[in-house]
Length: 224
Image 1 (spheres, rainbow, N blue to C red):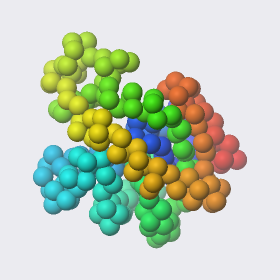
Image 2: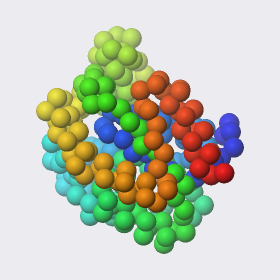
Image 3: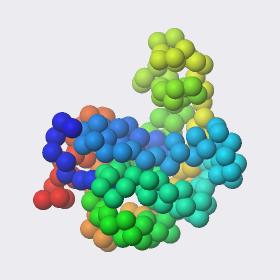
């Protein structure tokens, strides 16, 4: 770790495309935390055609939230596997107030204290630009963008040579639905965590390194 640990249990909030995964990677590398992404876990379950994957696939393809009971069960299992001393970043969980309440109960059972909740704020038009241009390698999960981070050879992964794809939930109809779902079901979490004194609001448009620096500084200030 390259700097003093300021928080060991952190939640990243933000609409689809706000940069949660990118910023989670910065915190993971900076503070040695485990990055737990519900989206990555669910997509792996779909690829492996597990029972959870089969249940979740239809919701995900339509840009809808996977039902709370499935997500809560999955996440409790993951947190228990990490052990009591583990530090982690939650990316994509909780997504509803019901999930947040369930997480509070999990943390209490595990003896963990939530340090900070970071809300990345990005305008809708920028979110749509980011998501529609995103391309994913189905083999190694590398992420590209057709405008801001293209692969060397168009449509081909630099890392492994596989053909890049656009996820179904990154197509225009699904994106619009995802943003509406976020506003209706996930945005109320902002008030939930603000009332608990845990919320940090960050401008997600100022550039990746600057966003990362703002997050680190804000989390360390909360911990003082």
